[in-house]
Length: 117
Image 1 (cartoon, rainbow, N blue to C red):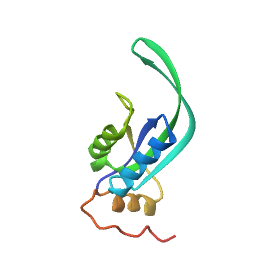
Image 2 (tube, rainbow, N blue to C red):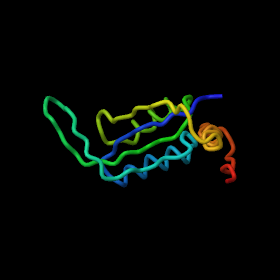
Image 3 (cartoon, rainbow, N blue to C red):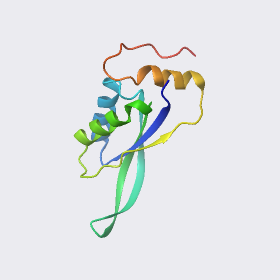
């Protein structure tokens, strides 16, 4: 069984955040995407220090879906080089992790209900 990962993507607008989140979840590339508002990113771009207000997408998916996440984000994103990074999930509520593994399977699988509480 594949491992669960969390992806991080920064975006400039709420509209783009919603577009990417819906695209990932509706195609079952991700089980869930959280949108976190009110972050400030400071970074070097073309020789200058830049600072921008952004939103952060926190994408829960399987390790096997990382390339599909990257592909979809780069198709939809407005940045030349969008931030798309992942970290492994090393623990968590087993029922939640199983749900992520059940849902983030790509478009070929049939949808399943979330685990009961």
